[in-house]
Each structure stands twice: as structure tokens, then as C-alpha cells.
Image (cartoon, rainbow, N blue to C red):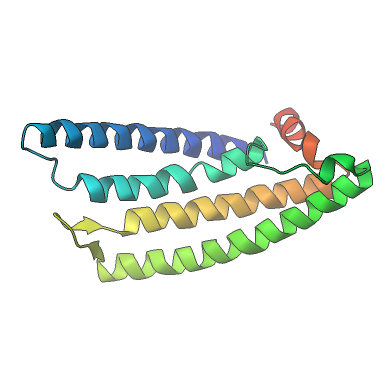
Length: 168
């Protein structure tokens, strides 16, 4: 499972690069527009990069337990209750992201086969963003399966990030 941590690290780096490119495109578009020369295709590029930034980082955030959590109930539960709640949450996440991954791969394959482009100022291929969505959702499923495995071994949700760091 240390390979999953490595892949998560690389995809998080790619997501950070996508964010950086979004900022550059946005800034170049604003500066260009101020001088009467807006950047053609900036909107479409930023739109696709946003999908990369979100879906390539989601599994890494899960590995670090960095997603937003509401602890109103959980902090008052005994260890066994927190563990059970974590198992249920992992199962729900596996189901949800499994569906996102399944339909994402289907959409990617259709988009690639048909040569689908987004209509805008310039034609922009949609398959890279669809690939990022499908790949990121698949990584999230693997990460949630890893979390579930650790929880079934008795590691409560609040200790998952540390347990995975120790494992890697």
C-alpha cells in the first residue's frame, strides 16, 4: 500500500501544478483584457484545469484526513462508536466514489472515442478532464478501501493519517 501513498503524492503535486496554471491563465487573461487582448481559451482551460485540481488531490486529502469533518457527535462517542462510524463513512465513500469512477471511466472512453470537444472561443478536448475525474475517483476508492482495512484492524478514524504515514 506504500505505492498508493506515492501515487497520492504525485497526483497532489499535479493538482498543485494545475492550480498554479489556473492562476497564471487567469492573471494573463485579466492583464490581456485590460490592454484589449484577452487570452483566447482561458475560460475553457481554467475549467478543465479545475477538474484536475480537484480530482487529482482528493485521495491525497483523504489519506491525510484533511477533508472537512463535523465532530459534534463523533467526539462524544467511545472508541468503538468512532470506529463503527468511520467504517460506515468509508463504506459510503467507497460506494459514492465507486459510482463516480465507473461513470467517469465510461464518459472518458466515450469522449476519447468520439473526439469530443468543448465549444467555446477555441475547441478544447474534454477527454483529459474526464480522465482526471475517473482516475482521481478511482484513487479515492482505493484510499477509502485502505482506510476501511485499517479501521477493520481497529484503527479509529482520528488515527488513520498517522497509521498510513507509519505504513509508508
